[in-house]
Length: 477
Image 1 (cartoon, rainbow, N blue to C red):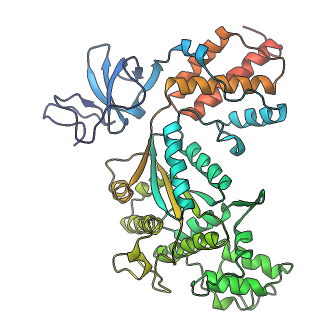
Image 2: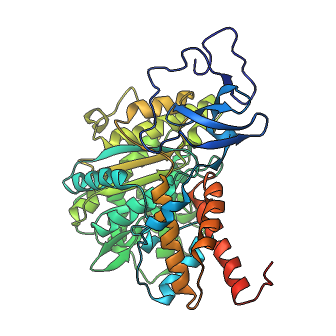
Image 3: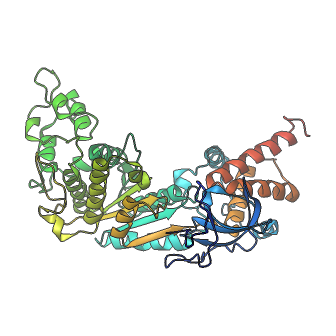
């Protein structure tokens, strides 16, 4: 097992292990990005030390402490306190040279929350050139009708959500159906497929003729398509053709189809606004075995998109590690079945175009997982859990992986330089000396070990303090 190879090894409760004589396994590798020879970290018990090596995709560090002790430590147990050369600031390149003040103010307000505005996400992406090339290739292949599955792995704060936002932005620009869903162990868990479906259709977007559209617009444009053989979308489109869009019945119908309501409510004969003829449409089943039903719908939506001139469906799932937090074995099994169904649907597995005895099917209206020929790019973003059964099972099913390491020093410098430039354009007349910039960058870099989001927030707050002192709103100390 990782971290133990001799009887003399001590294993504290936090996962720390004394360095064994041969600590590596076939899965270990040196970090391909940042060099850690001068990276200094601090541990609450052992004090300060130097990082000598990493393993398990950077989730564990080999640290030599000033006391001479050498330990393998989980990354989350230490805090980086030094290691970035401030002289790199002299080589920093601002990505934005000229933006209007309104755009700059909008960006600064988003930076205060540690996020990047959606429309600026492509330009404010640093140090991810290789990852971006991989994503661009995947999107081009999807445009040719070839769906795939990618697993984006990285520790908290390495920018997984930002990369998903980048994919979302690029996919919309390239004329694709795009949606993003964030798993949550309580509200949007994969063992409740209806809730995942509701989130997916709520966030579904596409752009045509310079205008952004959503799920309802997609179905309205699909009136003339011949998909009567689809178990759900066929009767839904048939009803839409007869539906008066101005009648309140229309909104009751849409809330049902989008998963916000239920068939029982929408077709209740006692309701004056009931959906007439709705009994012919299957219900959106709210039970854990309905993975086949919802995968069939999603593959149907990707098919509709292609028929309408769009280039496939891009489905982005954040916080995929949620599945590892389910302790109920039944919920865990159903969650893994749904996620496996999504993966194999995106891979266009021919075995799922018919009823499969190896997959779970609902017993009310069982259907194949795949409808016709889907065009689906599926991207999971997750924190690595190399010891977890559910994580390993999912990862083994996915052939393409993108590993996000912490940003290299030059990327942080470029981000900082760009942020300062934007801030100065948001507040004309504000200036900050090179010395003050280096002091702020040094302090922000320490916060940056907790993630890029905290790095950005700290930088903006530091610039706020410098501005208020200079103008002067705060008394200089």
